[in-house]
Length: 292
Image (tube, rainbow, N blue to C red):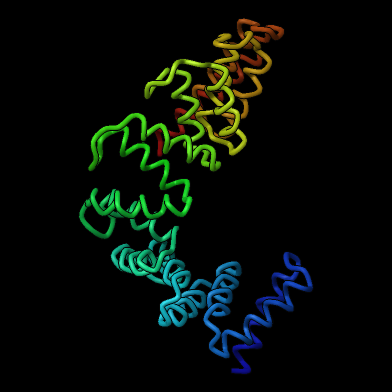
């Protein structure tokens, strides 16, 4: 026991530059409580070990905590099996653990279980079960679940197509801060989908919200709208700003569009050298992507 505690102390001190004195003291307290069989402390200790990248120890404590039926322990242990952290990757075991946690009402476990049924991971594809668990997760405000329910209602997956409900789920998810849903709402307003009238101003509002979360497609679309003056006054400088952000995230087309703006001098001074440089960057990216 003393040896284990000494090892824990050494580990904690290796991360003291990232932790406050109060956090180090709390870590020691958590370690003590976990060894006194406090289940919540076991889960917290596992999180500490994960933070320190001691994944096998994280799994050890999650396994101990999960024996009591603690839903968070079951969920975190499922994540370890799903990602292969501290244990060999095993999606079937992950599925079973997510299911146990989901039945106990763990919202994120419900969403992950639904995803596995939807994609046939660790089990055969089962849209009925996926729909059931996405609905349960959405009731607990899991924005990813709301977004997927929007897709299922829009495409008629295990349920009759319903554009109105699809829109409601997308909007709920977007308002909850989910970037993919915010981008989807922008696309809906831009193209006039799901019974919504085209409204470029609203589209831009949603793209800007998604862009705050570095959503590459939303950022690119903002560049495109400003480059071509779609629904807004044309602004080459703003277009460059968004395209450069998208290019940093790896968007190939954004690099070509930057080159085009410099070449034609769209609201900026024409710069053939800059245009050539951006075209070369696009060429290099295509070459690298091809070689992978």
